[in-house]
Length: 195
Image (cartoon, rainbow, N blue to C red):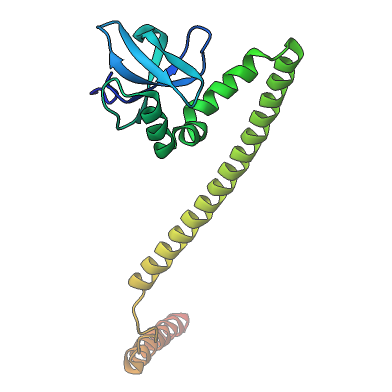
């Protein structure tokens, strides 16, 4: 990933060491590879040399000239509205969270842990309820799909005309007459034998 923040004139920095820790300033001039001349007229940081290792570069950049006077820096700072932008930033929110964490007592940490446990428990229950409902809905949908497929397959197997096939009466009558003739013939032969 390429760098997006560079040490340059007009770059707003966050000071993390010394008596001005936690304040914003602007790089007015680069002294050498390790130090820069900074000025923070709106954050009560006097013009002075500061090491790069003692500051963080922000994404804000002011349009100022090299070795700009404090009056010009203040005007550019107010025009760019740096203080409001930094207050709204995620960086500032994380700094405030860190301050709150460092000032917590042992009992506060215990209460925070219990609150997290309760939150996780509620989320877990809600997750499993939603999961259970979705499983039921899937099963119902699957059952409907199977039933529909069965109905379609039955419709395909059965012919459209559900009328009974016509049986010819002549063939039935012929079969009956043949059977009657055979039984009469047997009775006659039995009667002849008996005489």
